[in-house]
Image (cartoon, rainbow, N blue to C red; front, side):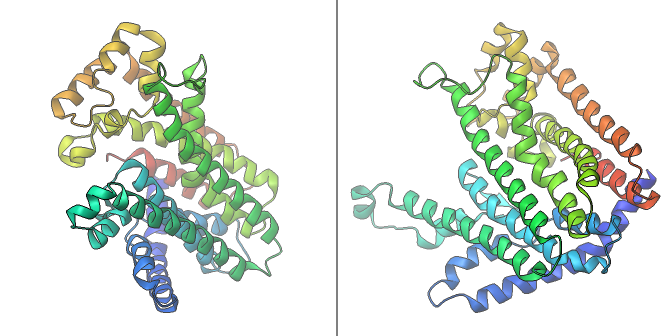
Length: 375
């Protein structure tokens, strides 16, 4: 696990500096906000801190492994842009998923609801959706503000960088792919759950594994594993051939990571994740586990759907779902697929010839860092 220790050392060295800079950014954003807007933007800055800063560190790492002509801190503003982008889409994700906590604190829409909640029964009786509409409107708008703040930072800091056009083009592609994945993550479960009741044709093809793999790649790999490191490489002047080789590695790692996340969503220790275990079942999320049962065992699928969509699912219900996945072979299928993509990522990395030993060790260490995740 030499690679893991190499990556952890890089993470430990760079995280504190990025964390300090994001704090400075948040304070400046509050101080410079227009009169009457400070409270609203505070919901964004509240969330825009306390994260793992993993994407930011990966951006620094991408610049570092290409031996950019400046020190690694030159990539810090790119790193902060990615963290701001992450906070922006989390506001939207939490709203869609009805999440109550994020990074150990209340989500933005929960804070907005608590601070503006109307207690007048007459108002609520006349306009029952008034709070829902208000909270949704402010949350969505805040997410948009964050997205453009992230983009503005790139333009301000790297206007003179000769690679700015390629950087912005790649950044835009990452954003587009991530949003595409977010839309799929809403439409696909809805279409599966109500396929007999909606007039439009289901987006899920005959082979459900195709759309699940696309979903996992778009919603996770593009902006969690591949996007940040490739952007850092581009900032340092990496060629298209070089970024393509690393993209292949990181897309495999990202797909494996999403499958791992799906497995943890069902099989993680209840004491570690608590109510989050089984959340994918309650939300009818489409995963390789579900797709395998759907493709191979109609009777088991009918049994599984007694639990899917149940917002009150408890530990006994989760254990019943686990038993179905174990019995049908769905767990083995998903676990083997995860291992395949982690293994292929490492194999592809070993064949890259333009990275030195330290660069390869850092990427390998990141992959091993993902593999060791337990919650």
